[in-house]
Image (tube, rainbow, N blue to C red):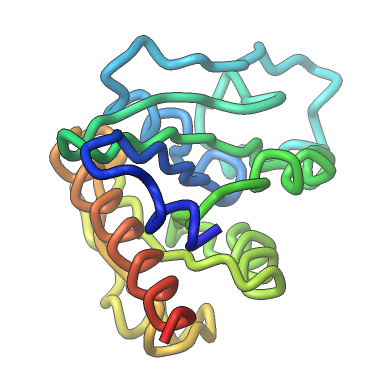
Length: 194
């Protein structure tokens, strides 16, 4: 994959695939929608009483859920276009993750610190596949509830994995997270090439 990035003709836009993952209700759909320069594709479906007891909303008034993926696009530079693929957060949809991650150079694990355990599966998934990822702590209502170091320790992630604050509703904040994951993935690819 790294050679596909570095061996393109000069001046040709580089299409880069980034996956946005995390627990149920962490803000993945909002994250993709906040940054996409095109109307995002969303497969949100209304939650029904059939999901009661299956989809734990944590007491929030969540009325929809992603059932396949979210898709968006953002041009970071004249020659760098990011394609964003948001995963569904429920365990029952994990079978789709391999397909959604195929060809990705990196991932953002969006974390809701009120439900930290919900993101363990995403962290484990990317670690086991050695796909570079960052952790973006979603600051719901602009509130930072925990120090970055405390979240890093709770997730037991390596020191080289970036942990950043992010407001999934704010385009500038999401853009900074996207730049961070892109840089992290490129740094990892360069390290492999050495």
